[in-house]
Image (cartoon, rainbow, N blue to C red):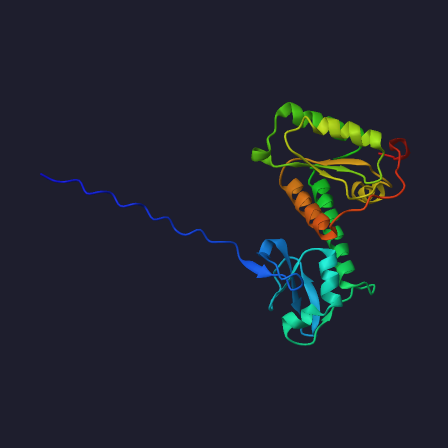
Length: 236
């Protein structure tokens, strides 16, 4: 007569925690993904490594403009590198923190341009309204296709903002991006000015949201733009 042996418990592999690094300015330890990496080049210039791919020992900061400015002012890069180093300046002589912001803006606009070229970008109030109505009627869900990215110019009129926001409320998941003015959005659309735009759910919208979130995080709080443009003043 055989006796059943108790089954041994299955041992699950330990969950690996995300790699962490310490911010040179604040001393906070955070996951690498939340920090900005810098490296020292052969000319002893500190350069940003926004894609975290450059060779060399990484110098890590919380990815905010004021933190980068403090790192330059207090010479913390030299402490991290353990030698005398100099923060780079941009091609127009701009400071390191200003150069990084300009590069993050460029990347966000590049993501929007790529979305337009791939046919996933619509602009103009009527086209955006139609696209939002289509998404609301189709029942597209964030889990299946990801967020849509709704852009409204930072200097747009309140009436147009409210109308588009009401339409977007009927779509399952829409990220609002209000950090570019009408002239900047116009560059993406090939027009002088543009107020409303929408990136349809999918990979392009994810790229746009990631780039915009990184820029907004770097800026901290985006100050409102001066000179609100009425919707009737903008050629869509």
